Length: 511
Image 1 (tube, rainbow, N blue to C red):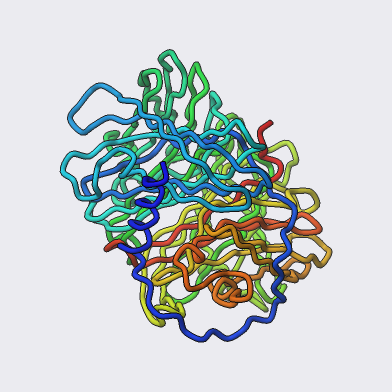
Image 2: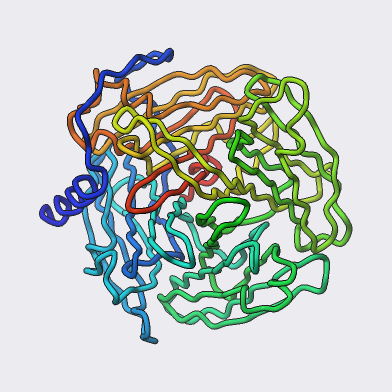
């Protein structure tokens, strides 16, 4: 067991991050502390429908343990080798020390190297039973797949269910998508994917996904979807399942990249999107889809929130079985606007429900103390957080995070309430070290918090001479409702990309 963990760590950090000598780093304004904050939300079970190793793909599972007790973690891989029809199952176990972050190398677990010609498509179930729970994400990078070399990251689902939703599934010239379905049950699941395209009659596709196996739906094989390019999706099954959407964007809106998003458990009346930018080289769109069960058009309001505290609202309507695409670049021109901008999407009728996703096509200029100048490009995709401006989560957990060479990490914080708030950011690294900052976020305001800078200025508590100090999980909390997304940029593994995800919120905890 020890040798496997050491191999994963050495492979991850020695081969890919190639750390250079430490540089002197200027301090940041926020005060540092070594005192731990309250543990963030956790779950004992996590599910990932999407995954691939070999043929250019490299994958990890990152685990955050914010508890005061060690956790024994089990990973069950359900995988199928390319060209085979039978799904295989393999289980591995490892320990994650208390108040620590762990990285598990999936290619090593399945003995399939990144560029091995024999590749496998997989799903994963991650669980623990001897501690209160953990936080789990799946970062994945790929080279030369469907015209792109990029990567994705998702926070796992904490419980299977019979229905899942997506506001946006691109196809045709808008991108190529795959809808991955994990059936974690001991009997087959009969799955129906319903596509809602341009207000026409919904299109249904059915498939049987075998027990303890992964199935894949491919929208690009449906002519109407390729023509319309965009669809909202509802996935239903006769047994609880987990669903993800992975999309690939070769040279679309000026950039190439990929984005994966976990299915939305249910439509909501109001969504808060903490991240967002229209800086030079970025195009931001927010896609709003009607609740598939709606029988009439749904009026809604989009409110943009600037870092300056200025806001602007726009009234729009989405048709039955339709989508509305809001171009943030074109509308972020109000007095007091800033390039970094958050958004609230809310139906006007309290009984109406919406599906929401935000896509950012972006070219990025990176700056890290270990690699002062580098560039990246990619696409991020996020549904945001279902909450109102008066009630919502006050604490979030993240498992993944990296702040060393050719990586930048940010926490995008938005306070949609009428009261100023203080947000506490606690980072925990793979050495079990912790550092805490307090960030003031004004009412109706947005803050872009630089996690890379925080790590590099934590020399009093982080052992920055060691690679593992730069791999961090996070607990983010506030004294009132707020939303947070973690944004990553990278130029590594012969890939370039970006990702943005909301953390596990208190309201999502599974008993």
